Amino acid sequence: MCGFIGELTLSFNQGKEYGRLYNALESIHHRGPDVTGYYNDDFIQLGFKRLSIIDLKCGDQPLSYGNDRYHIVFNGEIYNYVELKDNLINQGLSFETYSDTEVILVLYALKKENCLQELRGMFAFAIWDKQERTLFAARDPFGIKPFYYLDSENKFLFASEKKSLTIYENSDDFSQEAFQHYLTYQYVPEPYCLMGNIQKLKPGHYLFKRLGEETTVQSYYKMTFNPSNEHFSSYVKKTRKALDDSVAKHMRSDVPVGAFLSGGIDSTGIVALAKQYHPGIKTFTVGFEREGYSEIDVARDSADQLGVENIHKLITPEDFKNELLNIIWHMDDPVADPAAVPLFFVAKEASKHVKVVLSGEGADELFGGYNIYREPLALKGFSYLPEFLKQLLKRVALWLPENMKGKNYLLRGTTPLSERYIGNAKIFSETEKQLLLSDYQKGVPYTKITHPFYRNARSYDDTLKMQYIDLHTWLPGDILVKADRMAMAHSLELRVPFLDKAVFDVAKKIPTSAKLTKGTTKYVLREAISDLIPHSVLHRKKLGFPVPIRHWLKNELYEWAQGIIIKSPTEHLIKKQEALTLLEDHALHKKDNSRKIWVLLVFMLWYSQYDKPGHMK
Image (cartoon, rainbow, N blue to C red; front, side):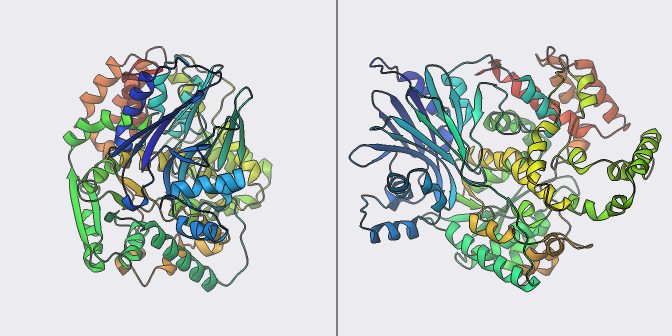
């Protein structure tokens, strides 16, 4: 696992300064504390940090190929590199290392951008063609690994983390549009950044940058659903086979591989499959002291039944407060998902024992795991009503008292899916943002993010539409950001076997009727691994990584939160009195505002880490 930074100067310059590149690279030392490497020529500088996972690969970077023509920096793992390499050798090509990095370079030299169709793994990389003076960069289909870039008039900068670019190139270009989207989604949707001149290369995309020409960005992989009409047992069999193969390939490492273990089916299934290849696998779990906010007991029981070791830790409110600024710093842009906190601590605990962990991210999006995906079944009756009657019911619902039973049901049933569902988090409405913000900008509603995806998914049933939205927004913008950053904060490589192209090729063909029933979610997945995991886990209600911020903001963290709001230098962005009222109403049990307050607190703490918006301290 690695981190990189690069600077492409758009005109010949013999007087380059290397100090800034060094400082920017050191800001992501945590991504690769074992090895540091550099390359430069008349037009480009490359810096690289490496965490040694498979030492026999000997793939020190930046790596060159083709008589010094091609140079690569690569963050990730190619899980089918052995098979790809054998095929290339059979074609008469030779290799100087055992690394997957060289496999990418050889494939690129042979097939250029078409090489991406053959890669199976998580990756973000950049290849400099010295002869053609062309930079080629790509990101994996799911967005597991990050890639940021800044395209200016005189140079093209790119890096594994945004903090490298803000150190390298100061900017006052704060994006109000991105900020307003953050307040809705609790994360900054891709390709936006809060620093408006910095962009994220979207998942499944590549870019070309040739000296003297405009940068071009193209899609090379599209995640689409294509339900088939097979027997249920066929979906079960194919799912098991694909997962078994994916876990086997994700276990490739010369260092011990561990796994995160909660009380749910996703992580338990991964551990059960991984144990077949590594019987001594260690598992890691965290929880909070408050009742109902810990899965330690369930995880320990699952570990005992699976016959694996479980290492666990309780997180206190003091632990939480002491590490929060560090957590936010590692995120780059703010991500106000409370689950980032336990992820940080479980990664910290795991890093004491292993360098690589497996985790269950992606199972819900691929196999229909969120309870909200059953909502279209519950609202199906509304589809039979004429439009005028739905509008009448909606007007009636709006007049009902806020806490009256049935109000939300009527509102959801009479609101189009594309307006009510934007992913697993919807924090502030547009009306609420107008009251909260000092300078609310019209014309950038939250639906601007999701409407293009709804257009692409118009032929799907409503549940598939919801999965499609999450695959393209929630997964890369929230789930995978916090997974990558919280693991790399402790120099730990996190691998996600569910997010594998071969697994998705199976999942995309499973119809909604085989994923959801009245009583359960992820039905095919549960059946596929039912013989491997404890019965107590198989149909257990999804809990995830619960965090007691709702309780803490009324008690242990109330004064702390109040102080952050009062002291934060964000008056020009947020009306402080509105924020304080949200906190006060929450403490007085008038309304559960915990998620709204948390989104504001995370942003304010993020903002405090900058001397000015574009310059990190």
